[in-house]
Image (cartoon, rainbow, N blue to C red; front, side):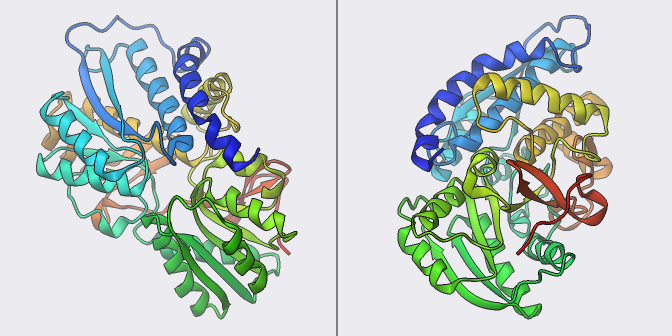
Length: 410
């Protein structure tokens, strides 16, 4: 599917997502008999990119939120009360995100908030949360050193320095099969989180003796990748490292294909998972991941049940890739962290919840997430994955490789 076709299909996916979620619930293992919740709902507010350039990935987060809240209410809600998710469309724009979180707190008067999707939007929401001393659990914040607010908690276990660990893990994976690149081309969107990692990759490559054949930045929202592709082909690196978010990776590959150029080894920081995996141009593409429906990550019964429920809902919604991965897993763990703290403390007080989360961490589908490090970041739980035979598999670290697979490199 070409990039413009995928973008054009986003609205259809979003409409279908809302309809598909309730149907998937009947078969999920999360369902349990419980006394029906009663009383005024506990209102949890957030925004998502339901439209705009980030909507393709926003669709994943909406499916997750709909599933989680429906299953929560089927089990009796929280504190005996039903839960209502107050969701607004931030249109993929951080300035609108900021305004909407102000509205959620001051006008809609929600009880609690959770984060939106993507670093720039989360940073906007975090500023509002800090102004009102609200807890903010979030799922996809990519610049940990900027998360200085003491009541923010990352559900995405990147560790404090992903700009180092991510490129180092990639190079370690290639080195494990004797394919350490001699040259690297780094092409990145100016979207904050991916640009941050790309700049870190420059330093890692230099420290490891990999020659920089090209470093090129482009504006977020770029549609014409032809000139960028021409520069990549001219550089002809052993490794193409793309600071991509959403569909940018697909769009660059399509432009390269028009020039009859195929990268030898290629990595994308935060791509939309489905389009890259299902495109014939995405073969051997690599990325980072926190969750895949693969052993050992899905050995936990809760993780396996979550994966099953998500796939059913994503299939009914018509998403191009229905397996849960980083976006879905981190989004689910965000809800787990917040609701787990409410259950444990029997409170909706932001200070009480923040103190509990900070002290205890949380067991999630991604594993146990701790918040005992700088800016409430704990241990790095990220892995490297690769598209092989039309699907993502885990290729690094060694103890996490999907059985029957190995790193593919040239």
